[in-house]
Image 1 (cartoon, rainbow, N blue to C red):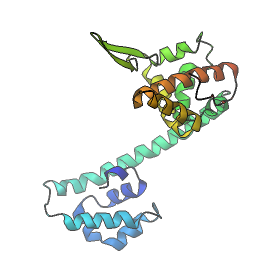
Image 2 (cartoon, rainbow, N blue to C red):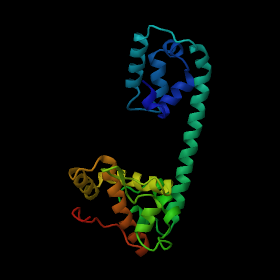
Image 3 (cartoon, rainbow, N blue to C red):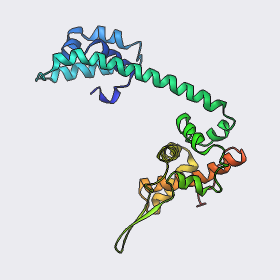
Length: 230
């Protein structure tokens, strides 16, 4: 029940303080609400009610619960520390990215965030080391490979070769760009043409690579391309 919210500060605070169902039940609703409200002002009541509803339905005591009560707070504290370090690292990376002369150019493209932008700049730079737009796409493994078996052709799939970090950056940025109307229209067009989700994203990522290469090479900001193109 807490799994999907495990990284939420309120949940980690709860697990650091109470490591077992028995401890949570003993504490009661009011102390839990007092504990969680500073971390989750708008959602504190709902998880508390869900927790106690689950406790009321519990009929079996799992072996090892007492040991878990000792281990869980320590694990929750460790996870909190890791998440705090990740936030600090993300802030540091964002500062470096903002200081890069091509940062504004790169991040003008929908779907390019701090992490994806950093990976792209590290691997592609200003694009001057690549003769054409096809070269960074091939380097990332975005050049599609046709899978076949005998006389059966299974369609285009992402290549298994290439720079996986760069490939992931291009794919994540393409997925994030689905909120952009022009990118979404192009993706939907590929779906209508019979492409599956991954294949449509491959096409979108590959198309965006061409645009990104031109942006970095020329120092120009992103301009949406008509969805009918490509």
